[in-house]
Length: 92
Image (cartoon, rainbow, N blue to C red; front, top):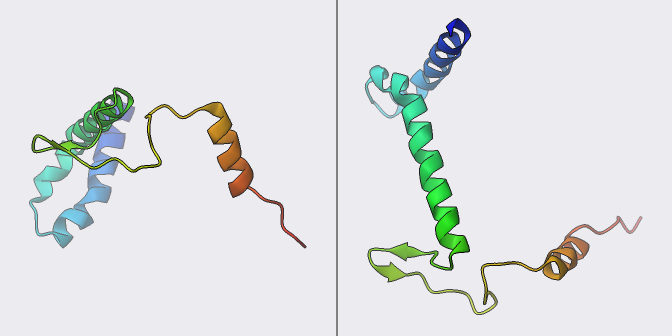
């Protein structure tokens, strides 16, 4: 419990310069874990929407999907091909 409180205070203290840069109240640094929890929940919700095939929804409209992406699920062959194209040995 004490270690957790110490880490929370250290994290909050490290965030204070950013708050000062944006001219926000220093007390907001104590809310950093709540901010991180919200950001994590938003990221997970976005990932779930992506895998359900409903990614890009904003203001009741969907972002235009690229012509190359027909399905949100990537096949292992596509990943292997991408890895082969990306990771090439140096031609030295």
